Length: 248
Image (cartoon, rainbow, N blue to C red; front, side, top):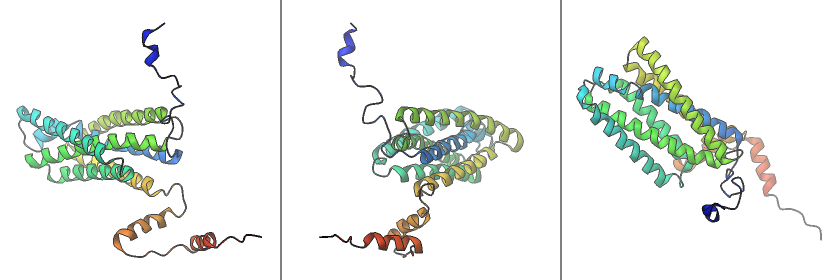
């Protein structure tokens, strides 16, 4: 008998408490898969040609590329650490904010990337956001996995790999057609599209017809501005609050 058999789990892989999502939702899951694909594509369009960008646009010496890559790598580690610290408390918001930070960093890189310091800072910020995005995505997908959580995680990993391949290819097309500076702009715009879908998933438009009103109610708690409830919803709420008549 295999000597390590005694320490192996006795239950099947699909019988554990983490084998399925805590709040299964196939529509949210597929939205997140698209967000992962678009977010990765946007990041890789710019990052694949980082050396060309910082040397030709920002004026960084080719011999200093190790500093640029070290700064981005350190920022990526910081992004993962931040998500690890706060993702359990704000699982949806963290994902949305990471996509937003990446979009802003890449668009600002296009606008102000001619300065060496600004380029290094913005590339590092984009790296922080992308690493945080992948970390936050992993936890969020395990929550909404419509089937087995390991299959859902594999699906998101596939989406990220597709984004890496498409991003590198699309970046090459942009580079040859419009110049290396445009890779940051195109990557940022694709990330904006990913951000729109992340907000859509967070606000739950795909599940409830009154999700738009629910999102406005969340904003109401922050701003103090009252939002009226749709008539049909108001009526249903009033009916739900009516006491039940108990026959004696």
